[in-house]
Every structure is written in structure tokens, then in C-alpha cells.
Image (cartoon, rainbow, N blue to C red; front, top):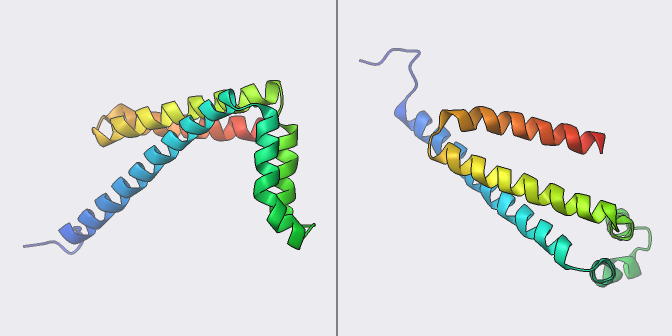
Length: 130
């Protein structure tokens, strides 16, 4: 006999699936962050500017005031020297930590749940400050 306040297996399964899908998405995002961090270390700033111009030229030819395209160009032009190193280290560290913690949560390590919350909060604060 089921009590009126107990969860059905169907809702638990659905919640568990949604949680796991979210974790896999976070893990894939972490892998992309690692790749992006490595690429920022390898690719020269001039190549980034050239790539950004190539990717945005079509949109800017139609709409010279396009906010996103202009923002991309401005951001890439500002990404030199120390800011480039900071961006690559930020992406690498965030990506590696995210992948490790997601893997540990998927292995059902209790400490990883808490660590994931604290680390995510810490990176949000660092992003806000910088």
C-alpha cells in the first residue's frame, strides 16, 4: 500500500534521468572549456582576431550595428597578453574541476555534490569580480 505523500517510482526515475542528463551536459561543457583553454594558449591573438572577423563579416555587412558581432570583435581585440593567459587558465581550471566533480558525482561520491556547489559558487564570484 502506498501512502499519499510517497513519491511514485515514475517521478523518481524521471527526476533521476533529468539529473543525470544535466550532469552529462555539465561534463561535456567542461570538456569544451578545457579544449577552449588549450586553444587559447596555442592560437596567436592575431589568428583569433582574423577568425572573429571572418565569422562576423557576413552579419556586419548586413547590419553594421549588430550587437553580438560587434561584441565578439571588441572582446577578441581586448584579449591579449595577461587577459589571454587569464582566460585560458580560467577555462582550463574550470573545465578540469567540472569534469572531475561531475565524474565523482556520477560515481555517487557524496563529497562531490557539496564540492560541486561550492566550486560553482566560487567561479561565479570570481567571474563577477573580474
